Length: 596
Image (cartoon, rainbow, N blue to C red; front, side, top):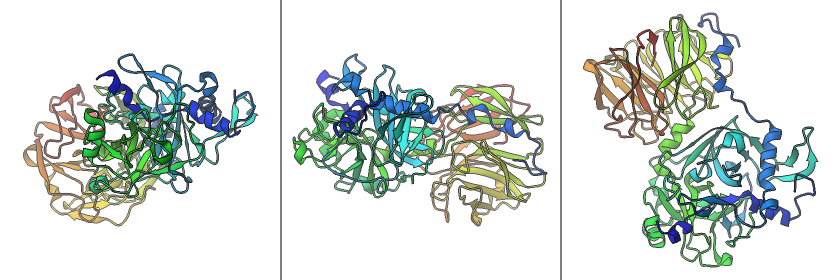
């Protein structure tokens, strides 16, 4: 790509330095130095501590350390003057770092956009930045991949939610000498897990989407991610709004806004975007929004440096993520370019719904040998045995899920007396159903009812399948009949979206190993489309669905053959051919109960 083209593709992040410029200009920076349970009787015997692997409770920085990270970002301008930090491009030349922008527009409040998040972080070169993001679940933030790629958020990052304004110094320190910040009513959180799209291209900024997982949930009301049927939100002239604390002008020394701003960002046609950017624009994964800038800040309303990763909201849903644009944010005819969330909503949901034991980007396996349940961690290519989870000799059905959406993996099992137990990740054990002895199959495929809360599905001894809509609190609504005839299947499995449409699906294996995909609809009254035969798995004696085991954002299938080898069938996202060529994931699994 020619140099002139590359330098025009500017990521819309705002260096934290610019935020400090804005705060210093208002006199808000002070002269401080920092301005320079017990299980039920019928449950399997277990050690509660053992059922909470170390990875479920990662070491989290203190609030003081997080404040220090934010303070360091806010004071970065004092060392850098009024220059933008520079991050090397793939070819070795500099390009401005992450940025976000709202030129024009108007101020708003966090009550109007409760899901807005501020991200502060340091890159590998020691430069400090901030980006925007959107809360989409209590522990999940959607942002841009260029705000995450190459960044270690666990070591250098901090996230603030629930605040209209950016933080300011109080001029005081805590007992450890760390600055006390006025967070303007916001909540400060550490990041314990990060994911960006595996096909993100730092050169073209294609596939510019990422998800951060917070150490604990926030109170902010989540912003719904658009659904597969919301294609009309991208129709030209459809109303949209973009939010951020980015630059308020297009000049290189323009400061960021200390107050949240909103600007109109009505959808533009792909044809208009193509005319503006030519081959730099990737239809399908990007889209343009907002009126064409006029060349002057005074008559332009658009996103700019510092708004990167922030949300574009249409129809009350997350439709776009601030990605890139012309270096001169007000350049005539150069629209803001946004990541098209519809292209990635399935991968986003896979991250929202995919808790795992050690909080990396891979789903894990639990398997019982003898009486002992073990946690096996996926590396993306194989499994490594980790912790012992305790004695589960009485469990006859067992699976992983995250019923309360706290991003800690839970265990659900049925005991010998028919009681269904729920062990919260890091929490107590609760009986959620007293007697389900008449259920042949129990599984947690994800959200079947379309409310973003995980549900349960059961198949009775007579073959009737039911949906039990979850509340997120370990309780469920009245069972809804899915249909009869499910006794023909010896295995019914599901955990995630196999068809890449953002809805949870189910696999069912019948006579001769014929395996069918029941594609989810998101409608509790009719949760599945007509089944489609997708594979013949007659040589397999166990099918296990735990989520995304290879880290590509798609739900995978793990299976054991009659030679006791484990195979990974990677998800493809196709409803007719949902799995790619299998790869061996291990051998010698004959002594393990894999449940499924």
